[in-house]
Length: 451
Figure 1 (cartoon, one colour):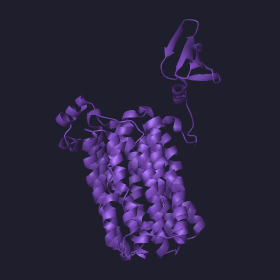
Figure 2 (cartoon, helix red, strand yellow):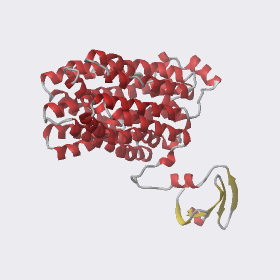
Figure 3 (cartoon, one colour):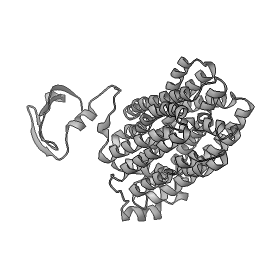
Figure 4 (tube, helix red, strand yellow):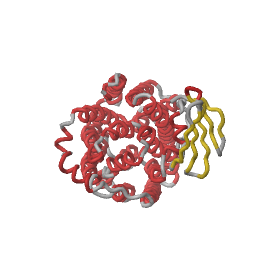
C-alpha cells in the first residue's frame, strides 16, 4: 500500500491512500484506535486491539537511518537487551586483554593461547547441541539463566590462576553457551517476524555497546589496580546480567510441539536437510576464519607495533562501538533488502580491517582499522537472523543449534592452527584470513544462501 502523510500528531494521523482514499487514525487510549477509511465509495470504521501507529510507521518507506530502534523490542526483549549490556560490559573488561594476560602474566606461548581458546570452542560446540534439545522441551528462561550461572565463576578462576594450565577450568566454563540456541528460539517466538534481522542485531548491539567502553576501562584499570581487580569487577557485572533474566517471562514449548519435536524432527533428520547443511557449511567456514584471526589481534599489536594494554583496550572499544553501529545499519539492510547482502558486507569489512592492520602501525590509522573490524562481531547475530525464521516451530531451538554447533566444532581447531601459523610468522594467520573473508563475501553477495 502506498500513501502520503497529510497530518500527524499525538491524537490522530491522516494519510492519503491510492485512489484518492483517506486513512484517518484517531488514538482514543494507549492500545485502542478508530480507523476511518473514506472515499467516494466507502466508509469503514474499526476498533483495533493493538496500536496502529507502529504498524503504519513500519510499512512506510524509510531510509536506513542511524538511531537505536528500541521500539522493535517488547518488554522481554528489552530485558534481554539489558542483560547483554551488563554482561558484555563485564566481559569486555578483560576479554580483549585476555591473550595478553595469558602471555605476559601466565607465561603462555602462542600455541598454549591457541589451546586455551580451542578448549572454549570445543565445549561451546558441545553445549550448544545440548541446549538446543533442552530448549525444545523445557522452560527457555531457566536455561538462559543456567547459562549465565555457569559463567559466574569464570572471571574468579582467571583472577586466581597461577599459570595458563590453571585457566583451563575457566575456559571450559566460558564455553558453556547454553543461551545460544535457547535465546535464538526465545527471540524468534516473540519477535516481530518482518523485523527479525533488526531484532537480532539490536540484541547483538547491546553486547557491542557494553563492549564499547569496557575494554579501554579494563586496560586503564589493569595498569592501575591490576588484572585481578578487573576480573572481580567483571564477576559483579555477570551477576547483574543474570538478575535481569529473572525478570523475563517463562517460555515453554507446548505439549503438542514437544511430541512433534520428538516424532518428526530428530537430529538425524535435521542433519539431512539440504538447506540447513548449506547454511551450516557457510557459517562454519566464517566462524573458523573469525577464530583464526580475532584472538591474535591484541598479541599482534603488542609483538609488532609494541602497544600497551591501554592502547589495545581503546582499539577494542572502537571495534565494539563500530559493531553496534554496523549491527543496526546491517539489520535494517537485511530486513529491507536481503540478509545475504548484510553477510557480504560483514565479511568484506573483516577483509578490509585485516589489510589495514598489516599495512599500517600508526595508532590513528589503527582506529579506522578498528571501525572495520567491528563487522567481525556480527556473524553470530546474522546467522541467527538467517537460520531462525526458517525453523519449524516444533524444533526451533534444535534447528538453530545445528549450524551453531557445526560452526563451533569447525572453529575448535582454528585458534590452535592460528597459533602454529603465528609461531612461524605473525603475518600468516592474517594473510590467510584476508583471502578467506574475501571469498566468503563474494559467495554471500551472489545470494546463493537464500535460494
